[in-house]
Every structure is written in structure tokens, then in C-alpha cells.
Amino acid sequence: MALLKIARMGHPVLRTPAAPVEDIAAPELQRLITDMIETMDDAGGVGLAAPQVHVPSRLIVFRVPAARDDAEDAEEGAPEGVTVLINPEIEPLGDEQQLGLEGCLSIPGLRGLVPRYRRIRYSGLDAKGSPVSRIAAGFHARVVQHEMDHLDGVLYLDRMEDLADLAFESELHHLLEPADGDEPSNAG
Ligand code: NI
Image (cartoon, rainbow, N blue to C red; front, side, top):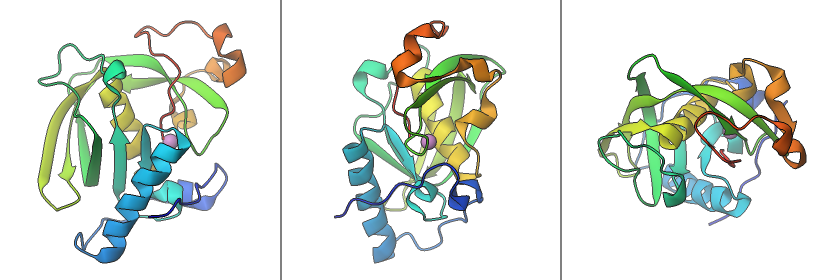
């Protein structure tokens, strides 16, 4: 296992659409998954996408802390532990969007209010190549949307409606409390 270097905003890999993973059993891919989880946990993030560690592949990892599982109308609670999603796909369920605070390990020190679909369905393959399909809402849905964006070269700043809703962490208290009550989060 190894800690990987996290790309920061400005590095072109963060703006490059990632390519599908083709060989899930490849030892390099399995090692990358292990290293991404270790890197995410070391950095205190709740999610990480492969382009953030300079690998332009469609792979994300995330973890929804139990205390952040705020969805009341998902079909099931957020998964325990780390979710690995390879070649993920996402589909909004309904038009409703929510503003919530996000951060990004590639944009350290900042937080911003970002609109996201409140409920989504997502699917993909896990680290063994088995299908994963879930309905997510609230924070869980937000994390997945944030990480999926990284696979398309999109950063949360691109999604913001008003850059006045962007702040350094130390100035966060000046931002209005977001509608869904999200607290500052270290998304990936
Ligand atoms: Ni991020």
C-alpha cells in the first residue's frame, strides 16, 4: 500500500475526461484501488476519484460516515464502509436539487455551496467486477455526484451558482446555513 500524490486544481488531469476501465482483475488496478482508499483516508476525505491521483480511469471510491447519512427516503441506508465503483453511471431521480457544502481534496482549504440532485440511482462494478446498483439521497447522493464529476473533468466550482457562496474554511461561518443542514465536508 502506498499514499498517492493528489492532483491539485490546475493540473490538466483534473480537466481530462477519464477512460473506462477494461481489465478489472489487473493487479495494477487492484493496487490502485487499495492505494486510493488509503490516500482518501489519510487525507480525511469522504471520496476520491482516480483522476485526482493522476490516473485518467473511470474509478471512484467513497465512504458515507454514518453521522452524515441524512437521507430519509432512500430505499436503504448508505452503505457501511468504502464503496468502490468502476465505470459508474448515474441517473437523477426527479428534478429536485439541494444546495449543500462541498470541499475537494484537489482544491484544499475552500468550501462552497453546490446544487446537486437530491435523489439519484447509480450503478457500476465493484472491485471484484460484481454489479452495484443503488438509490441514494442527500449526502450520499451528493458525494457520488461530486466524485462522478471528476471522471468528466468537472470540479464543484463549475457547478456553483454564485461564487459568493465560496469561502475559506476559516470563514465558513459567514456562509448561510445550507438548506439541507450539511456541515463542512471533505468530499474528494
Ligand atoms: Ni473532489
